[in-house]
Length: 115
Figure 1 (cartoon, helix red, strand yellow):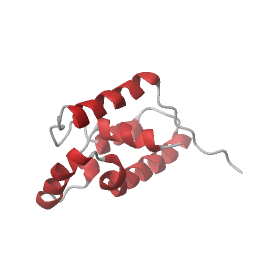
Figure 2 (tube, helix red, strand yellow):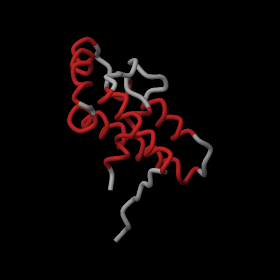
Figure 3 (cartoon, helix red, strand yellow):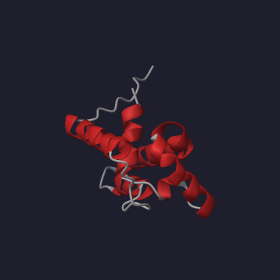
Figure 4 (cartoon, helix red, strand yellow):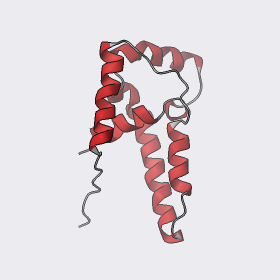
């Protein structure tokens, strides 16, 4: 049986998560959307980094899985209450997927939910 993938979030990024939470929850600051780069752009860059060909398919598979998981979970577990109205407006007025709008902060939140 293969060991589960472990994602370690470095302390400096954990501090960014806390800062992000404070900005949104305490200071009522919302991110300017769409972000640049978007989650899809970040993951495509990850896919295209120079690596051995044998690993390229694995990176694409991981990237596609993260994109799909993000798009499905954003509104359920990744948004703070004060961000939900902004999300609902975007959902009504845009045909783009969440990963084409949101950026690194929300991708980091996703990683923070993993065991």
